[in-house]
Amino acid sequence: MSYSLQSAVSTVLALREAFLISLMVLSSGYMLTLLCRHKMLSQHLHSTSLSPKASPELRATRTILLLMSFFVVFYILDIVIFHSRMKFKDDSIFYCIQILVSHSYATVSPFVLISTEKRIIKL
Image 1: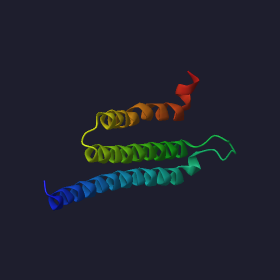
Image 2 (image 1 turned 90 degrees about the horizontal axis):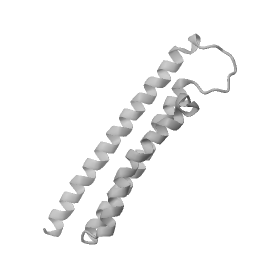
Image 3 (image 1 turned 30 degrees about the horizontal axis):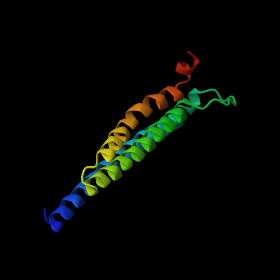
Image 4 (image 1 turned 90 degrees about the vertical axis):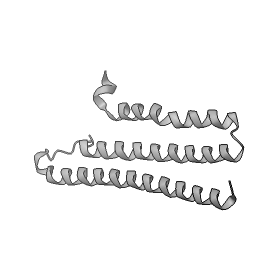
């Protein structure tokens, strides 16, 4: 494959990745906006006590931001390792590392959800 064709394909793939990540960030931002709006609309329903406990909206916001951050970090690591693998002609070590990184989000995300749910922790 010629250098110019390889550059064009890499550019198109990079643009696709940037578009998909920005779409995920926008959808997470939309969820956060809905949660903030819900909190403002339902403030009069909650008691005005000075409880140190965080509201459900705040906990959900933190969980969404944490999951999105983990996803973006692992996704960028996966892209970097993939391009390193291509540069070094499909080295098997890079392949094993890429498999490990690509499965890490699926391993970490349930623990994030469990750690943010107080009812599960008490069991």
